[in-house]
Length: 275
Image 1 (cartoon, rainbow, N blue to C red):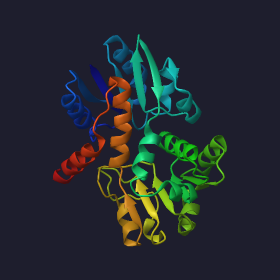
Image 2: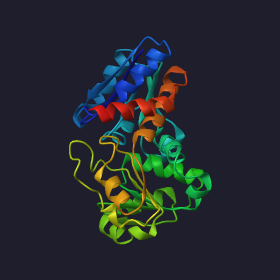
Image 3: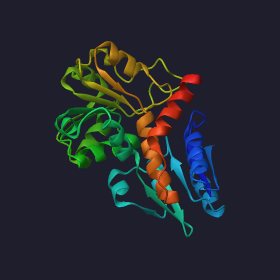
């Protein structure tokens, strides 16, 4: 079995570490690799996967939206979101899915109860592929008060309208001014990711005490976004849980086998601490 993750850049990815351990634990003969693919190489790379009998692949920044035009079919939920992070190749056809949202939700449930999530005022930072997946799952789960902030407010407003959210779309400066109003603030952007670890999407040192800052970045384990939130007395959730849970959903889709997620969160956290 041949599997891969594509992105640009991709060298930071821990996906091969995770999926290769799972294949080994479940006695599946196969290999998972990380392949750096620039936007102009995307279509060519997908043809390569088809022609070389790959079972599937993951999609990360910046390809989650653009990959759709090169697929043969797309799951209804992923179509509604307009973003794909997992592709299954069967009988020469590529079908796109989105496991980001449910992966994030499983991670969030380790920090907040179902009732707390549904009642929370939630702010999503970013309006790209990951934001779409996460926002869609939160809405389906019953979270009713979701706002989106983006560098350009038009893209945030567009996503709020497309998903029928009751919150508002805004730019980051407005989000900064309203930060005290939110119970959960989720960074879905790549701002603060290795190697640019000192960057911040917004200054979370102004979050209210007891709120939750969640970052989908897992390298570094504690981004400036999370550290500043902690300094304000907020709770924090890094991206390891989402990364592992969304990966487990993809792995099960490809192999029909359920991998051990809880142990993998510990393994990746330990690995990151050693690096």
